[in-house]
Image 1 (cartoon, rainbow, N blue to C red):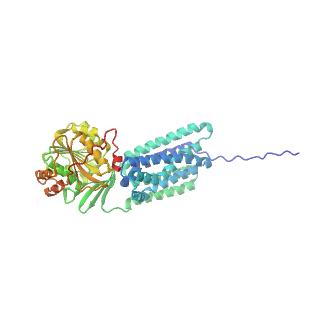
Image 2 (cartoon, rainbow, N blue to C red):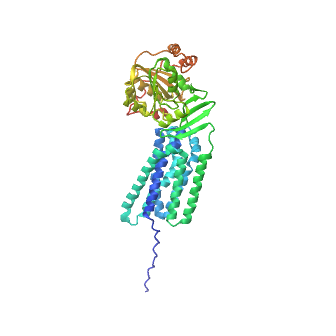
Image 3 (cartoon, rainbow, N blue to C red):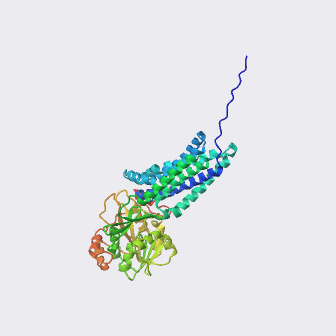
Length: 517
């Protein structure tokens, strides 16, 4: 019986060896771009959904979910097609998915906001639709690179550790460069376009270095074309004709608009302040005009503190109408102060001192005592939580005279089921027992509006008639007398009970959650 001869098998050709340093450059750059995109993602969502904890929570959650998916996907693809050109294809795909974001995000955000699903769901849905795909593709890069570099099983641990460490260093750099430099240097759309083109260029360079010059040239040409397209969109793209300036600062997306002989300053599409161009001292918005009514309670201020400057319309008018008063105006954003000086006529002098810094730290580090304090600091549509707490108001009270007046602009809703405005009232009343409130219009349930809260540590509450009579003491300053007398009729008396509302503290101040209810 003849013996069968075993068949010889030809071993599969090993994939071409990839230069380890080339892989390290790829994971480093992808790590930097990934975190740069996450940081700038908040500015993509903020014009529609604000800059709340929901936006940041959605972004972080979506990016983490995308990375988990990308790690799994990258490992699967690498096992089936462990070739460097495939890795470059993933990088190029991530670049393209990133590049298109500024073109699709306005429509996407608008469509999602129109669903009225609430701030949590809307923010999460928008973050998922816009950022999940590019983050998945970038997440796939590191496990794929590990597969290509690990020549033997014994080296997998070391290889994975090195590559993930390099990717993390890139992420750190991308975070810092985007947050500290790029956002204040160029527009959000240009940053996102630049991140996409960077990935496309990285893919092209990798292919060329791996001797795939034809493919590398094609991707490089595509990257150059996208770069030109992004530049043209930023330079010649359609723009609202009333916009005279847009700028991203470390704290806001600031837009200056002119319409009907008025100039306005907006943060993330939320109107903050405005002036009439023909009479720059006029308070252009309704809420600061109603806010002026508070001066009837305290018509002779000498030392005024304003936390939150924006265009500086209220400090400027106080400065003009009360020549004996000294005013400290504090805003956390130095670029907002610069814009107020350049475009709105804010001119600091010995009586109007403008400070760039956090309002609470300003109180902690200073010693001046005040007899009138205006609180109007907003981060988009929310007061920064550390300026809403019992501890903050106690620090503020320590810097105020015994008969001083606190005037706070609170935006929210009043009525059954809404807890934010009552929580603010309860927290203020914990330190300033005499609290009264003036809505800027007739209160409507389930409608956001400005409430002007006036508070003192002692004294009696005024009636609307007493407030109306006190308007005469202002002699037409800030706002004409007849107009202020009309606002006096809006005084809420008696103020409904807010005893059951939560007390806001440094340990517990969920202002975004309360505002959403």
